[in-house]
Length: 341
Ligand code: ZN
Image (cartoon, rainbow, N blue to C red; front, side, top):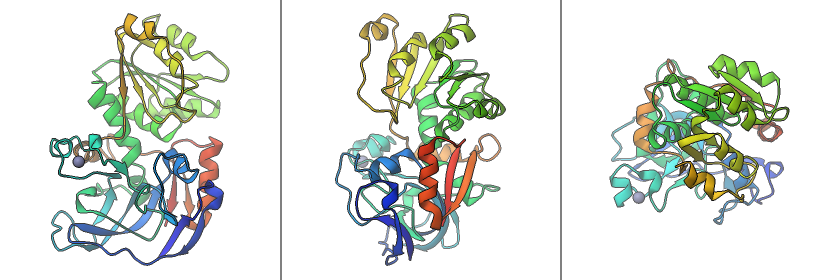
């Protein structure tokens, strides 16, 4: 099978195309003929050697894919050959207390597909049957491939952890990122007032089209001051920070008393200094979020494509996979970048 892979951890420029044997499945697994995958910053950290565990080389990468079931193991009942499926990219043991209580993203062995195992940047990938879900009608492979990490992390953040309610005020960093677009859409399901940031003026209108009420160009304006202005000093019920070290201390200043602050991703680094008085003095709750659960995934799939719809920036051919990652790192995109396999 054709695959994009790398054999050294030196970033996207080390990606090559090559031939690999089609994976063998066991009785509980499914072989998926991948049609499209979407990019995440996680892929970049892994290929740059920043993931805290040893990555097996050569490595077929990427976590979020969709395709057609090519083969099923003897015991598989939930899908059959020919089904269009999207892969839930969180793998877990399936038998521990956390997994059995539906908190598979808190399983000790929880990890994204495409990190310690081969991922979806190939014509075929094998995954446990419990990780494949039928694609909702009227959703393309490209759109479906954008859902897993982006939407599950956003849903788990706003709905499950922060407990968003009707009319909340939500502050979302990076409204033009894949996860930013998903967060805006989910917040608007709850009629939230959404304040978001962008680093380029051309992204302002795009965020507003998605439903953002206020958009701040953080390169030109101080986002804390603008949040104070836009909320009449009331600040926000929920603040989602996936930027990390550069913004987190200031993000705390955007949350109101009793507010909730979400952290994941940290694309600008993970080491930062916070003022503890801000946290206890304002009764803040900080939620660390690592993806979400299969149960949540099964639930949110029902909302596509009518209530939620992935925003696709661009679709690249597998031959141009390096260009796709170059674009991701340029920050000159809006929504998700997809590669067709
Ligand atoms: Zn487990």
